[in-house]
Length: 89
Image (cartoon, rainbow, N blue to C red; front, top):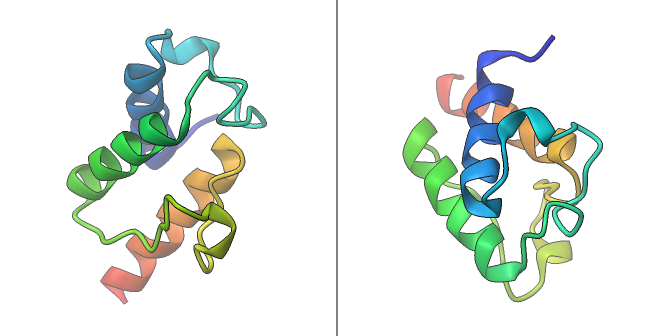
């Protein structure tokens, strides 16, 4: 069962990838969704706006985005949940 955060992140990714949210699995990579670096950046902006958080994401080098896993949908959801918890914290 997906939580509210996961559903919102998935909806944002689906909108960027132009696919149905029900077609997105948690273990899917951004590449498998058809999201290139620009699509991922647009999704990150939408996530920041939706959750009122600041995402430490470096689009030039995603591997350098400390503590922010954007490799898979599950990683992205977990990273967003962590940022939400830190903000509330």
